[in-house]
Length: 449
Image (cartoon, rainbow, N blue to C red; front, top):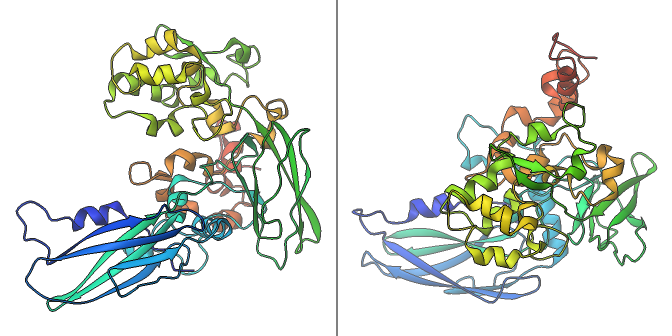
């Protein structure tokens, strides 16, 4: 495995000649041939231009990041390789999730990175794996380096080759949408024996690589899926129960202040003023208006924003998300998404109610599909104190990189939280559970049970 080097767009930008500055001694244009995909043959051609009058002495390709590949033609202008398979990329994704988002060389000196285990990464326990946008893109990048030697010096250029991966951004909760892969992870041990022991009637789901540390399956119908694996250290069988469902959406209108009105099918139980009455707080939040405000004012808004700003946007699968809503294509054709106007949201509500129903960041974005058996069960299927829930949207640098910033801070030290969590005076700040206990006591006192 090649040590990971995070490709940064900022680096490429800074390397671009600025107006009025001297031209770079050497410039390179890259051309990729072949469609990057599992098992595909890919080649990268470098067209080298020498601008300082020197002479070319040699070319050398190497790999600096991504799943290991074998390079052919490493001393020519065209290098080629075969893209590895799904299992190799799945394992690499897990490794990326365990590592810091940046290397030590890319960080300022006052932000140290642990030399061995990174406490802010994927925790070593039996779990449904959460995948954030940055990690997914990073795991799919095969990063090549071209070193050009001329009589005036040596110059290096980086070319990432992006391999589209089949996995999606996920929160790590156990209430999941139908049709999308679910990754399951077990701690390091000698062997693994994953088994799908329960699935809904009519399901053809099966586990991929059930003897590997990380397995996966795609829930193909709504219902409960139960997976077991032997915990060798604990000498017992571990069970992970995952519930799959369909997206629904809750917005049916807007009030006099243009805040969303939730479906009465929900407010019959989630009554304002009761412990279940979260809609009153939600409708006043930024989450509840992020789509609404952007279609009215943001002239750069488009479908690339919808994975976070709507419910269930994913054109690769039909599971009740916003792109599966009635008149979805008519909505796209209307221009209301990309051509701003003060009345856009009002028009969307009137003309495309099923689209509007799934707009903005709603309950399901964090808690999973509403049309699900987990809705009635509640509890740990739909809730999590993990920051991975936030990372689904806030883990996409550079604009949305708060999760990675948090990971690199002392606040993300999970091991420290474990050490301090048993102290009643430390737990309110160092653990999510302790903070909730403190909040239930109206933040009175300086410790919790």
